[in-house]
Each structure stands twice: as C-alpha cells, then as structure tokens.
Image (cartoon, rainbow, N blue to C red; front, top):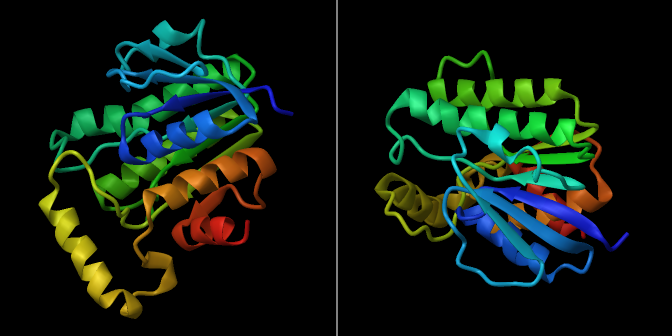
Amino acid sequence: MNNKTAIIVGATGLTGGIVLELLLQDATFEKVKVFGRSATNISHPKLVEYLGDMFQMETFSEDFKADVVFCCIGTTKAKTPDKETYKKIDYGIPVEAAKLAKANGTSAFLVVSALGANPKSSTFYNKVKGEMEQDVRSVGIKNTYFFQPSLIGGDRNEKRLGERIAQVAFNIFGFLVPKEYKMIEPKTIAKAMILVSKKGFSEMIIPSHKIKNIVDCD
C-alpha cells in the first residue's frame, strides 16, 4: 500500500529529523504530518506541519490522524534539568500522543525510548522511560514498538559535553563494549523504525543491538 499517512512527533530532533527526511523520500507514504513546537523549515509537497503547545496535545485531536505515528520526542538531563518538565516531555507527550492515535484509529505507534528503561528503576531517567513504555502499551494500539538505543551518535546543534566525551570514548574503546551497549547512529534508528512500520517485528521492545540487526538484515 503506497498511500499511507505518517505522523512524526519530534521531527526537529536528531533522530526525528532523519525519520522525516527518509519518509519524504519514501513512496510508501503520500503524506507526512509533523506536530511540534518549532517549524522544521522544510518545504515539501508531502509535508504538513502543525505547530502548537506540545503539553496540550488535545488541541491537535482533529488533525492527529495517520496510519502510523513515529514518536521521536525526548530531552536530556543537561537540556532540561527540572525533573517535572523532563517528565512532561519524555513521559507526558508520548503517552498523550498514543491516546490521540488510538482514538483516531492509528494502527502502528513507534517510540524512541532508551536502553535501561524500567518503571521500577531507582534511576529517575530510566524510571520515566519505563513508565512511559508501560502507559503507552496500556493504550492498546495493536502495533506498538519501543526502540531502546544505547548512546546515540551524530552531531547535535546544542553542545552536550558529556555525550561528546562518551562518543569519543566509544570510538576508541568500542571493541571492548558488549554489542548491547555499543553506540548507535541516529540514521540506523530512523531506518529501523521505518522498516518496522512496514514489516512489523516479533518483539514489542527492540534494544539497541536488535535495532542495528534490523537494518543490517534488510
């Protein structure tokens, strides 16, 4: 079927931006809707943008209709040090997006989570991701998938010194790192998400090394 509509939440981020780029090139999708706070500054006949307050997702309810939703929203401790705001972004937006998608008949919902996500974790950030996965799953969209990358490579607009140091360390000592924890490129995540949206996958939770396998085996 080559007339699908896709939604991207978080298209101005590193991974979401690549998902957008690939979907605009993909003949399977005839329309790509982007929901966000900031414009992508991309002009394309397939692209429709809806800008607004992402903490008020219900305002998008009439337009939040698609065959598949790619949820790539996320922040970091460095960028959002306030824990309440962090949770509103990394937990609240995906959960509300899933509810809107379910109400509007979306058949597939794919989310970028994180390795180590666990609702019972003693680490706040892993706990938030785990709670997000748990509550998105409970919404009940038939084809729901959680992508759990380890450290994501690539260049970001904002400077994240800790991540940059970690990336250099992974590049030097990567051969010592178990495959489950190896750094993964955002383009690999984006490609895997699109492939899974088309073909499905045998597991709902897809850890970093399996994300890479999906792309390598295509």
